[in-house]
Image 1 (cartoon, rainbow over the protein chains, first blue to last red):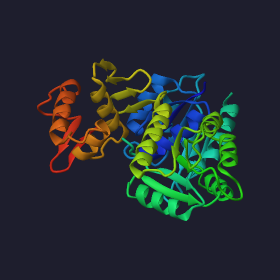
Image 2: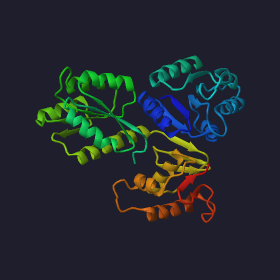
Image 3: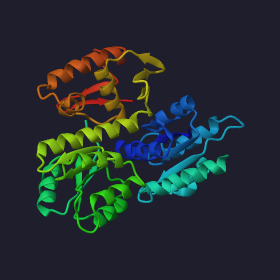
Image 4: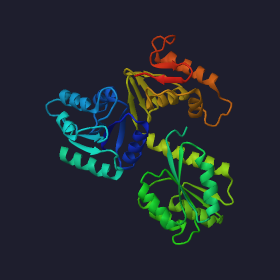
Length: 124
Length: 231
């Protein structure tokens, strides 16, 4: 099964993602903030990361940068960023930080599944 | 126990039933109630809303009956469904469960019974989706599948209630949880549990989580409001 790390500070959003991703066949791991995301990535070795950019503390952009800096030469975990237009998130910044794709909020859960599959295909 | 907002879709052609159920369930903050008066409308609402948590479904309705709705819903979703119907033949009950309902309530229904059955079905569905998750919150890693918690990589020996409380804190780090919220989470069916029980379990949890339980830095007291996890 595909292992996904969901990095999202809002418990309700995590529950929504969890419900839809588990029913779609993913093994779901979660991190509640940017500080928790890096050790969770190291510990669980996910196949893909769903990353909220608007995290409190260490932002999603910084999480993406730290992961890219820490990856070994042949490693590349795909990162799908979730951005908020109203919060002023710039998708270009997400790409510059190392994210592979983005989805704007509010996330359509059906589109999310499709997008994840696309990103995974590209990474393989 | 049921912390998140749940969208409950009530489908019944009898307006009085819809009104009674909507009024009764809406008094719970965690329930957001949607309604439909026939099967066609029910499917429209279900597809439009996308994240309906549970359907209370009548069988005998004009346009499209409950059986057709159930088949259509099960064709695309595992959303919990509770049949509420005047039909109490065994053959109907068997058919309902064969088609994938999660529970069955006969009319005339009793509201408290509807409420506890809704809670029970949601709890089961909720737990089944949590079963495979691993949640990282700062130094804590909460593993639902193994019911274990690690603190800075070290496994902790927690009781079931201590595990549940740790999970509740880890779900919402930084959020103040009142004693009342903790009671509802840990003892949903125990009306006599109160703030003293919460103090006791917080005390026990701190002994396992904190280097110095007398001066907690992880599970801290917010005077006058409750407790929060600091990660």
